[in-house]
Amino acid sequence: MVLMNRIAKISLLVIILNIYHLLNIRGQSTQTSTYCNPINIDYTYSIYNANENISYRSGADPAVVKFRNEYYMFVTRSMGYWHSTDLLHWSFITPEKWYFQGSNAPAAHNYNDSVLYVTGDPSGSMSILYTDNPKKGDWKAIPLIINDLQDPDLFIDDDGKAYMFWGSSNTYPIRAKTLDREDMFRPSKATYELFNLDENNHGWERFGENHGDTVLKGYIEGPWLTKYNNMYYMQYAAPGTEFNVYGDGIYMSDSPLGPYHYAPNNPVSYKPGGFMNGAGHGSTVIGPNITYWHFASMAVSINVNWERRICMFPTYFDRDGLMYTNTSFGDYPHYAPTIAGKMGEFTGWMLVSYKKSVKASSYYDKYKPENIVDENVKTFWVAENNDDKQWLEIDLLNFATVYAIQINYHDYKSNIYGKVPGLYHRYFIESSMDGKNWSILVDRINDYKDVPNDYVEIDFPQIVRYIRYRNIHVPTPKLSISDLRIFGRGHGQLPAKVKNLVVNRYKDRRDAMITWDQQGNCIGYNIIWGISPDKMYNSWMVYEKNFLELKSLTVDQNYYFSVEAFNENGISERELIVQSE
Ligand SMILES: *[C@@H]1O[C@H](CO)[C@@H](O)[C@H](O)[C@H]1NC(C)=O
Ligand SMILES: *[C@@H]1O[C@H](CO)[C@@H](O)[C@H](O)[C@H]1NC(C)=O
Ligand SMILES: *[C@@H]1O[C@H](CO)[C@@H](O)[C@H](O)[C@H]1NC(C)=O
Ligand SMILES: *[C@@H]1O[C@H](CO)[C@@H](O)[C@H](O)[C@H]1NC(C)=O
Ligand SMILES: *[C@@H]1O[C@H](CO)[C@@H](O)[C@H](O)[C@H]1NC(C)=O
Image (cartoon, rainbow, N blue to C red; front, top):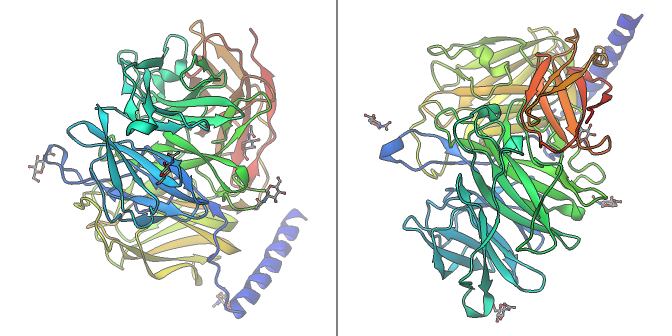
């Protein structure tokens, strides 16, 4: 019965899809309504540096500002910046005038109908750059009588008072000076110390992958101040940009200079599990229709620790004034900021390619094709060549309705440095029901765009079993892909509700061991926790395993935990459990 129904449903869809073919409508979307982290921009390559002459792309520490209802994104060492009208499509601007191409962790602020941008030069002196035409980029400089600020944040309050915050250290706290706008932003003599890490009480501020390093101290970095309802939310990053657990926490105050109080739901922006990890050092911006978005950095960290990408997450303030971001399924497709009523929500399109069977035209050295379906950005496939003879084929083993595809290219000995014009990727993707009769699903044959993390939405979802990537051109000497991710819905059963969730909070209350029963018919689990049953703001995705050692808790805080299972067909129901004392 069930099988018959399924066959009937598939035949109906096949008929509909054939009608689309007759009308000559392509599956591929022209009007994208979703996005998938990491965001797909033409990340700048690091400039050649004899001490570290490894070629890699990076984008990190995004400072996003709204200006005349459009958005500008400033990113560490990018030799320019990006512009967007919708927080979804970004185009690179090479400004007419630019200072200090090596600028790290910039700050940006919209004030008096200008964009103000703060940066330092390699000698350590700082300037405020400003322009009322960032599209042209005719920047003018106000040198600051202030030196060597790491990770600055410029904030000008509604009352016109200006502040400079900064900090990137495993010793010094986040600090501040006031600036006198009437006098070339002259800084105050006084320096205010706001707060520092407190690793003995805040588990998530501890250094290392999974907060596992017990020797080195964590770094406090990347301050960014957001004002909401007369409350000041000072965001700060910890414990280090190269780790899966890099995140942003918040201290709150009713005054920009404090006193500041630790937010009970920290870390606020945190994405330690899944394909792309890290959600730290960013900025918060008001998007369309007064929705808030938190931008941050994600670690790739294969070629060097500083190889990173940018992500964005929908951000909210709850009725008790706590700010939180939702990073759940945070590297799966979500609705774009402009989609009314759905902005930021998870689409429900699941990963249908996880550990499925893969074949390839060739592979180089030990970099095998199965690395493209393992949900690990740090493993990758390298083809023997970078030409149009190279292909990859994934057998999904079952039929699935495919809604979107993400191709994450990797830099394997790319030998490209700086912002090189004219880089592009060309390819096409075919699909098939039987592995014999193929039709084109994604057509990037005549596209000449630099898309290192290309994400393509399929307008008319296709039922397929086989997917084939056919390369035409990549800008790098080797074709290398870290993951080719296929999103959609399988046609089988949802996983069952998870059983026997047990949380064992250690004597060291920063840590807990969470376990549950392994179950069939699922590929992974989402562990969800929060400070009360209606504030379950944090999550950590794991594939396959049935335990998580969670080291990010705050000592004097009680928590509630839940877990859900997921597979190609969707997500199970959740169950709540209470963690006592
Ligand atoms: C830089 O490249 C040169 C030549 O390719 C090589 O000999 C040297 O070891 C490299 N240096 C580093 C730090 O990787
Ligand atoms: C705003 O900018 C204008 C000209 O660019 C300047 O004359 C004015 O003083 C500025 N206002 C404030 C409040 O800074
Ligand atoms: C803006 O928000 C309002 C109220 O939530 C909603 O009715 C409207 O559809 C939204 N518009 C857009 C463009 O998102
Ligand atoms: C976060 O997003 C997930 C996925 O859409 C959703 O199930 C969950 O309820 C959201 N969490 C909160 C606190 O809104
Ligand atoms: C191949 O598939 C197309 C539709 O996708 C169909 O029209 C055609 O008949 C199929 N050809 C064969 C030989 O099965």
